[in-house]
Length: 147
Image (cartoon, rainbow, N blue to C red):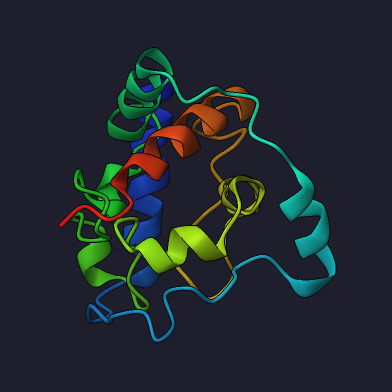
């Protein structure tokens, strides 16, 4: 049932954006957390240690019930099948500048609340749990600097 619900979320994103042409982000390091909430988001610490086991758990969620790969792509470049029609395009997690500019707490905030003006919908509580989101973030950090 969880996979069905996750798939519906991903399909809803596609339906919402319709036939919008694929467009690169104008500023890939621009924050997505509103200014009045950014300090609290930045203060959040990831409770998941960066271990091979935890990274594997995050990968399984990213490529499975979290449906993250649909937009961000299996390689994390923002080139997933659903991401092809989003404007702006999904975050490219291989961008090292992006990783240096954003904290894990900011990643978490966006996964929990979505991102206004983009195709990113809230996933915590609909597709994944808060704990699973931290595993996903731990995995997403492994994309940094990959070609």
